[in-house]
Length: 342
Image (tube, rainbow, N blue to C red):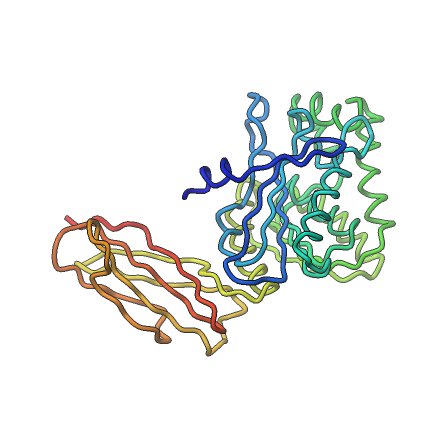
């Protein structure tokens, strides 16, 4: 089942002060961890397109409990806070989160928030305010009022006005100070992990306010900076970051990247695992080659320590390679893209 079909089938509405749309992916094996993902802007809100769930594909690789939550205050993003200077949306989101944690019997220290841009602001905010164990966020805004006022007419007249009740200078200042005062005053019991581009304006103009506050308060954080200068790159870089930091926290071993190449009648497979596993010696790989039209694999290679695989093609057809990674008695499986040989 594809992600779209899965979401359509499993999406639910939590009824609180405001209705919250969400969906959940359970772990394949028993897990003590929960990842909560908040969404950013997708760029089509001005056309009336509703919010979208972010980072579903990479986070689906992490074998733990996974909760995805939308940001839609009667159709308008509200940074998961609420409308007209209230926190009605936030209270409903918090109630949903605590219900899921309670139903699953999890510890707060094993809850991880994720998100980039608007979703990153929500991720760090909820993690700190509600004493969740980890925040793993990227390229987020701190001076949210200034940001919404400057991006577009839509963000100023719809989003800023939704949250604050206005779009004037006082509304901008109110929302800026809301987050700055929060980060200055909140008691921090969260493991803070952040990613950004070293020249991304969201880092230079926003996240540095956060790091300066944390530095002044002698609060530790982990900051991963990559070499890029535009916020348009955040999706790709933050995805790679998540596939390193989340497996380390959850102690899982998903396949970070599976490269497939066909040349000289050979299918070559190259595997990359999360960084924390690079020096591990108890990792094993197995391979199965499938040809379209056949249910059973045409070749199987048992577990070994070889993270590269080559299959010599002898006849035309459509081929896929299934890769299995074994670590600490857990198996993680992923299929390569289809290779058409003519």
